[in-house]
Length: 213
Image 1 (cartoon, one colour):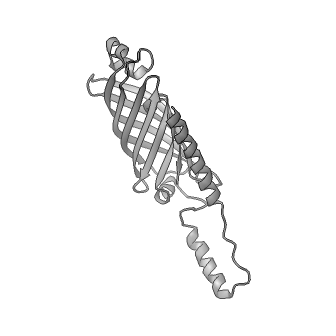
Image 2 (cartoon, helix red, strand yellow; image 1 turned 135 degrees about the vertical axis):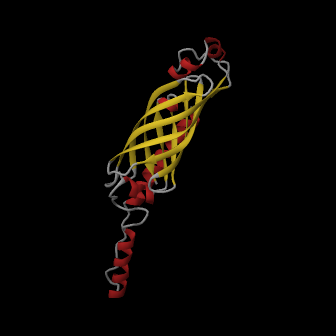
Image 3 (cartoon, one colour; image 1 turned 30 degrees about the horizontal axis):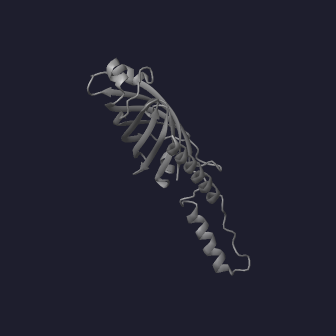
């Protein structure tokens, strides 16, 4: 838990730093000659499409410029609380990895995320793999709806578990495309975990926030 708190503190510190940098403006030297003013104008024009663009027309445009996203998630595939990262390979596709913690267990997942083009509110789907595990002797009975469905009472009582799932997520993501909060996003997704050992499909839901750098 101390590690999670430290990660979240670092995450929010990076967000604040990125937002401060994104508000920095370059003031041209009024004593410069016309040639310098022209160069400054050209720089401002190119800077409009730079990393710290002040506004985007769509979620695809933002993802094409900001390649890395990091955030936090609650419930569902995160157990109770965890972290998540997006690596945007292009405007539509990203690799996603995440981890989480619950009462007496941990979770991990990795997948491929495909987002559909829109403005502030964009749908997406993710397919991948998830593992829920624990190596300690902890009674897990009643600690997780998901684990209660795929493990026997004896397995839950013992606490040492390792459960694999095929994962599919269907979600919607709110993207902040302008203002000082540009790059922030919030998501709501429905998780479908298929237990490869039990042959059962289990629904869940997650919420969270991701900031794109």
